[in-house]
Image (cartoon, rainbow over all chains, first blue to last red; front, side, top):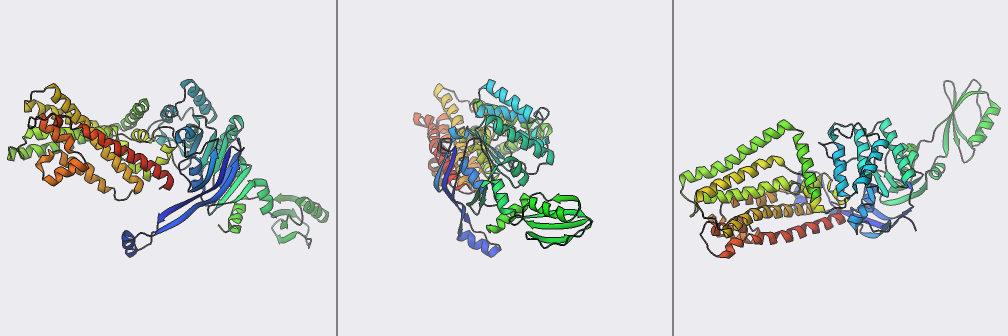
Length: 326
Length: 258
């Protein structure tokens, strides 16, 4: 039995149609036209305890709606959803004790007072026994390196410092599931790294199930083994990142530095262009593996340097979006 | 309850962060309040009474309404500012916490500056009471306390009702000012001084009449029926449907998300 089971959930929003122009504004004042937007349609997936899943898709694909349904804020129009043996929107108070939610774009900390005060308030909100609270807090302070910033009013913190406090605030009650909605948005490289490392550690040590949305593909690659791609409200792909990569990244660009001339018509080599120090080649991995290619090329010419391009996950995603027409 | 007081303490802490602003706002509130007060004084230098109500009777009425309103602004500011919670999307956060929603809304905001109004309202009330020369019996004392409580309750109900309206739309919120600020302005005077239409509206639709008119009549000795003395209790009953409507709104919110 999976830990999180989402079965065919759908959710449609009714939004008032807005047209530009004063005349249209008057018209809609008297007669509203409504548009029905299917934010999410027959989405199904299952997640096991302790998994880290990245939930990706372009803006407006239905990511936030899904997170809101899973966290019990929204009730879907149809479909079933069972998480940790509970239906999220049914027993709200009991359910939310098991989950933690971080919204990257919204703060749950009080702006004018130090984060520690918010933590103390959260202890009362979640009815955490004091001794347990002190241990958890100490632990989080240590791991997220909050010691020096926890006593400063939140408004004076940098974005990265604030995000670390946000994450700590969401974990004080030691939730079994953590939802991270764009946790690294707007952070600098170091802060991103701290946040990622922490999430990884948390998953390993506490076996916390983590569902994460992000537009930052390096978040996805470093954290999640599994991704769920959503577009136009539908689940388009659900599986390992590795598989997606090998399915989608067929062409690879390789740079070779050499003084010799390359003049080849070998199958699998798609493009050869002369560069300053050598050549740039594009190969199709279906027809020739990198290994085969290197064997072949070294038999032909003497190379002084070789540079194989990293898989660019951003490009992959763009391509995916194009292929699925989302 | 402990949670509520803790949140209140934090609001105070946050507000005191801006010390000068706090001091200035506090004193500007004093001035605003006295401008209301002087309007009444000025009126009574022209007229001896309004429809049989003397100045101190009106001031008593005025102070009770001001007290209830200011009390809500200090202790239930969150519900007054509920539209902000919805618009900024912070309401979602409340749904993610294992506590009663209305309680959390109350915890979400507080306006300590208005403590100054609370104090002033009490001062005016005491001045009015001294000058009214009423022999305060036990029942009259209870009536007075009930009036204060019902004044708090009525504004709270209206704030809750206005907040529930936010679940439908956050547009056109000015409407609610008719009932809160408008109602407050009206209710500062004994409702009986206005025409019958107002009296009925503020008795049956929004029961301001039970806060400051019917009990006032008993208190100042114009009516001797004991029912008048306990009429503020009706306002407490009025609270129940208001809270129910709010809870209905919360339910509806989770199915629309807007």
